Amino acid sequence: MATNVHLTPELEKFARKCVKSGAYNNVSEVVRSALRLLQEAEKRKRQFMKTLQDAEAEADRAGTFTVEQVASEADRIIAAARR
Image (cartoon, rainbow, N blue to C red; front, side, top):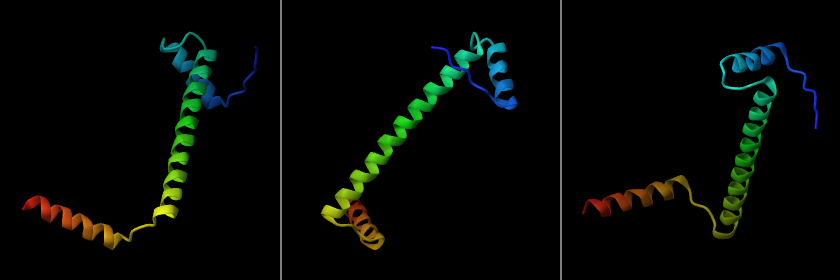
C-alpha cells in the first residue's frame, strides 16, 4: 500500500537526519517508527482514561474523602508505626 506523506520542512530535515545517522534506512522507516510510537501513546492514553473512569465510578459507589480526612488517617498510621 503506497501512501504519500507531505512533511513540513522541519520534519523532512529531521527525518533525513535520522536516515543519515544510520538509525533508519529511509524516510519511510522513520515515519513508520513515528506512527508506532503514536499508536503506543494513544493506547496508553486510552488505558489512562479507562483508569480515571474506573476511579470515578468507584468514588461514586464508595464515596470520597476530604484532604483533611486523608491527612488525619496518614498521621494515625505513621504514629502507629512509630510505636
